[in-house]
Amino acid sequence: MRAAYPEAHIAYLAEREAVSLLEHNPHLDEIIPYDMKKNIFSQLLFYRRLHTHKYDLAIDFFGNPRTALFTYATGARVRVGLDGRTRSGLYTHRIKDDAKPKTAVQFYFQFLRALGVKPESTKTEIFLTEDERREARIYLRWNGVDVARPIVALNPGASWPAKVWPSDRFAQLADNLIAKLGVQVILTQGPKDREIVTEVSRRCVGNVKVLEILPLRQLTAILSHVNVYVANDSGPMHITVAVGTRTIGIFGPGEESVWFPYSASEGHLALRKDVWCHPCHLDFCDKHGDEYMKCMKLLEVDEVLRAVESRLQPASAKPSL
Image (tube, rainbow, N blue to C red; front, side, top):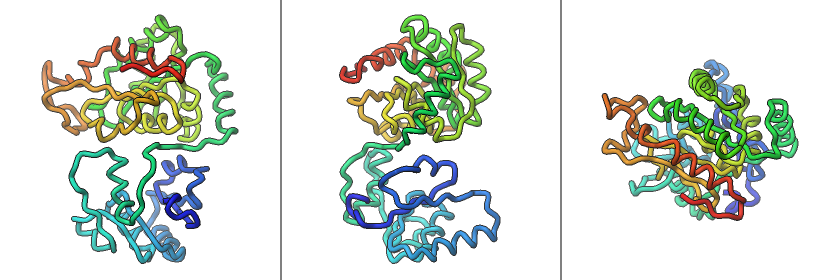
């Protein structure tokens, strides 16, 4: 959008906590945080605020009833959103997905092509300030992590239980990373991950550092200093790629061909084992016996360990699969 409209005022509206990741983005002029807990009066004021800004173009990437109303409230002459839903009447330009296999990035690029904008790059980016990076280094030192030595971070949590690689596998991976590769291992967690992170830490024999639950930008700055990140299919996995850290994503019910649109040449790798029920997209595995969570249990610790070891090579070296 910035390349196509270099003089335009570009604003981005999103949920308050998540939109912080767009701070300091040079392609944006304005960030509009929205509090999902607003009362009715506050919501009406918010709609009025959108209208008074007199936007010319509004794109609804999310497409739920609330965001469709946001788009309509802008009063923009051009309002773009997905076709095929009742609320699509609130848009002036309706996008029909061609139903062809594509990554999530390619899916959203359809909105831009409808406006005559040709995307030039698929690389995701989060922009950190030098102060944020410096404070992250200080935080790591306070937690006994030497930023001059290799650091591997693990994220054992996920939004769905079906996306979680077993906690004992994460613990074995952590111990092998310390014993065989001599690296420092830290565990990251979100607000809902405390139980599984505690379980992984309890199972570890080696000295694993557990980071507290951190604000998104602070977590992002810390992950920018990590050499390799191993994460279940989750938000932090995408954040780490966007700051240039080599990332290994562990997939089960989800489709890595959609949700891991990242370059192997930059050290990123999605790991998934083929099972007859993939992709199931289930929050909870509905299989029983040996079939329960089979897609996750088939992924062995040694395979992940080899992938990490390969990605600990110098940046100039090409990681192996």
